[in-house]
Length: 542
Image (cartoon, rainbow, N blue to C red):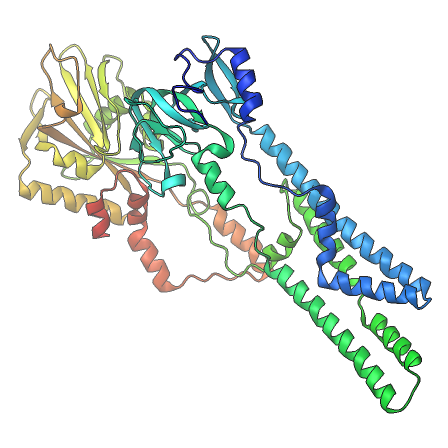
């Protein structure tokens, strides 16, 4: 490809329709298609099974010795087995491809100076793409404009935490791929928060993930079932050959005619060959695949049916399986651990006025519709990022202007210097210094909530003067800790119902009393570990 000064250097207004069509013809569609053999080669590959080879040899020998009936029967059985296997897997592959086309990614681009929605496969180098929170990055691209733009590149780098990307300030070498480059985003990443305008540099196999895909493009390893059938076929082949040779040798020792001995050995080999076995295997697996298809499951390889049936241990993620996957706000507590309506109101104000990507925790807070915030107005916001791990909103009503902060308890506590300690006669909160004793009490409360399986966020605030209108991350200091909000994803009743259905099929649980105790003791730690609201320091204590 050319450098950015050449092929991909149009204006930020995007490409024209004619330019896009010319580049699509030159670079091809933006699709990572695996290399596929022709249909004829895929069909012929089915004859490589040792058992099929044995049957073909037996068919040839039968035909050569004049036994046309046996040869015809064996040939028909082999052909039916191979055709059935091939047709079933080919149809499954076509269905999977049609399904992938139905969920094809669409992207927002600038074409002819106007915003347009096009399939991602029609992107070409030079296109200007508009990205926002929740979008997938459709190609490797240079960042032109960015606002609080964070992307998750774990697919490429293995790094779980999102990274911030800013507008590129220097020319970009299209041929050089470096996932650490600040001014670029890469295909396969997803936008966590913020928005950006990017210019496509590379598409399809020229992208970073495309080059990785080419390196990994190889035949999948055989399954246990395929290994077993192959070994059985080789065993039949060896036994047949040995018996034929043994028969000829014994007849030669007794001075029998060699031709008769050879024909007797061939008849023995044909009799030992299980002509119907490949047909029986293909029909059985195909029946299983059809039953799965009625349950809206596409089986691309017939051998996967046996692999699923041979499963010894089923590992499942608890979210949505053992739990309801519906997070609820269970408690809103002051620093002393008492219920506090004020903490709920402050958390609600923060979540209601947050304009970034809302998490399930925000949805759980906003589900409390009884909170009345009609008199409040939003003035500014400091979006969430994965370094601060908190979000702040500046709001006001008729009497006060507050900067309300919500986020990971450790990160919020770090910027708090005071703590709420009850209310005065007029209902306004009293504050006191957040000394070591009170910090230790807050830490103990957090540990107690974690032991009960809760995910926790801290809520803090700071009063601001009437002329304060622009909030920044630097303003998140000398805060007053209001309290904590605790969330829970309750266990689901469905697993016990499924277990009752599985028992007749001889399913057994592999959990033990020790495992159960560990689960009860560490369920909250697991929640916290998966939550962005867990700091490395807290992880080390778990």
